[in-house]
Amino acid sequence: MNRLSPTLSRGIARVTEAALGPYQSAVIRIGFAGTWLLFLLREFPHRQELYGPSGPWGWNLAKELTDDNHAFTALLWSDGQLWFECCYALAILASAALLLGWRTRTASLLFMVGVLSLQNRSVFVGDGGDNVLHLMSIYLVFTRCGQVWSLDARRAARGAAARARGEHVPADRVGPVLWAVLGLALGTATLTGRFHDWLIPALLWTAWAALGLWWAVGRRAAWREPRTLLDVIANVLHNGALVVIMAEACLIYATAGWYKVQGSRWQDGTAVYYPLHLDYFSPWPALADLMSSSGTIMMIVAYGTVMVQVAFPFTLFNRRVKNVLLVLMMTEHAVIAVVLGLPFFSLAMIAADAVFLPTSFLRRLGDLAARARGRLARRAGLTVPAPRSPEESTADHVGFSA
Image 1 (tube, rainbow, N blue to C red):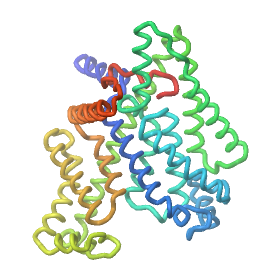
Image 2 (image 1 turned 90 degrees about the vertical axis):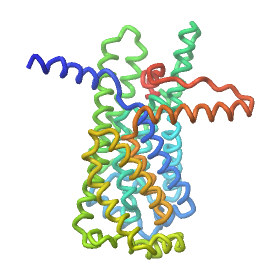
Image 3 (image 1 turned 60 degrees about the horizontal axis):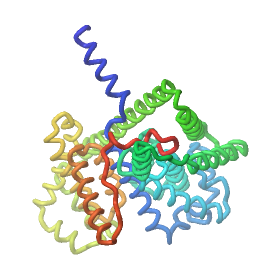
Image 4 (image 1 turned 45 degrees about the horizontal axis):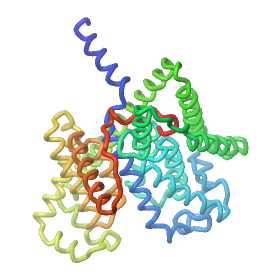
């Protein structure tokens, strides 16, 4: 027991003292927010048919279904056209804010509300990628995904630099206003009986109260112990959510792979051939015909897909093998996006896969992006601050920024 104590202590300290995987959490934030934003923009001309009050899946049918399964959707609070347009616009704005990392905590809550509201309004519209996005929108609420590659991180770094120079940093006014507006909206929805289930409203109220407490404690420099306790709780929630996201991705691939093993079409290697010849999954018929012209290629793709999906969860303890399979899976999803015409399903799965990307690779990717941004800024005659590491950034220690 004495031998295990130091190891256990180091493990507890690692989980509680820092929010792990800052780059991975930033990537999945950008990936899922970007996927949903692109989907909403692409389907903007068709939004009425998909989610509108007079669409094929009518308001009354959706109301009857949600009354039965207690799914949360703000779109059914009213059957008015103006309410629908406001909800759709809010979903777009929340996705853009989360993508940029602007007021990340509040943006993640609104992002979840937008995803659940639209998807639960018309449950028969989505595919597997929508299911992944549905779950991940909830998990992201618990993560501190604005530590790097976000406007919050940039604002916090500038504030820290100004304080180090002895300059006065203006008090945050946007955060309290957002908090007050969110509380007013939650209070109105609760008092008018809009919520038919307790889970989502309980999560929203808890997050709202936590944001207020975080801001109040942060304004008192002498309250170091309460602030430390809040940091520990936030770190534990973040790290736990990150583990859940990883487990969810592994579960998706494991179940998909083992179900494919049981299918006769996957066993004889012909499963990939048939979707390529369905009009719905053939945006490029010539490309589909070219790929399906070789039975050997079809068999290799079918068998390779099954083996990669079944093997991936077992390779997490071997970094090199895991990285190889990760590249293969991301490549497979990119091919699916082009050949089968499922771009948003593929983007959602690639975003889920990104949680396993090595930190060193992500940091190099960030450095390349920063240098490219710097070159563009110099050409435009602008001044761009040097990028900062997560240790230098204090985004999650600035009230409502987190």
